[in-house]
Image (cartoon, rainbow, N blue to C red; front, top):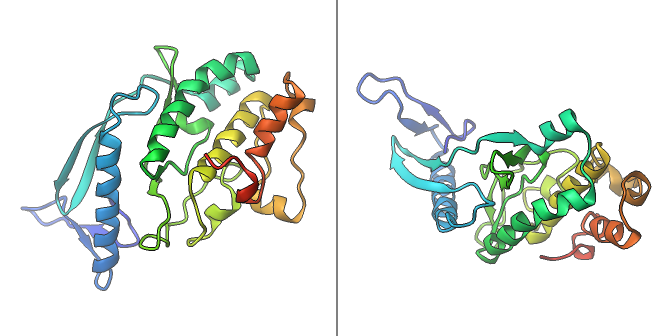
Length: 233
C-alpha cells in the first residue's frame, strides 16, 4: 500500500523503506491503509479459488501493508488475442466459467475487483484462467466508504466508476467482464462508457462474432449504461 498522492518513502539509514504520510494527509492515509488491509484479509480467505490469484500472506511493516501473492506463469488474454486472434464463444465460455463462479463468491463478501479486463486475465501454463491484480479492489459502497478512489480502464469501466461517489457493486464488475468478453470475441475494445452516454456507438456483437442472438443479448445486457439495467450479480 503506497498511495503516492498521500505518502512518500523515507531514505533514512536505519529505516530506508518506511512509508510516511505527507503532512495533513495522515487521516486519509490511515483510512486507506485500513481499507487495503481489510481487503487483503478478505482475499486471503479465497486461496482455494484457483481462478483468483491467491493472497499467501499479509504483512504489516514499514508503516504500510504488503500482499504476498502467488506467481501465475502464463500470458494475458490480451496477449493471447494479439498473437493468436480472437477466441470463439465455445472456446471462451469454459475458460471463463470458473472465473465467474469465483467472482460470485468474492462479491458475496462485498468485495469488487473494479479492474477486470483482458490485461488482468492470465492464461496459465495449466490452461486455466486466473484473475489477477486486485490493486483496484474495493469493498462495496456503504455509507462509511462512499468515496472510492477513481481507478478505471477505458472501454471496460462503466460510468459509475468515473465518479468518486458513484454507486459501485457487483454490477460494476459485470460491465467490465462483459466488455472483456466483447473484446475477446471481436478483437476490439468497446467504446468508452461515458462517450456511449452521449451517443452509443457500440457495434452489435452478433455481427462481429460467431455467436447466437440470445448469447449476444446477454453480454450486451451486461454492458448497458444504466447500472440498474444490467445483471445485478
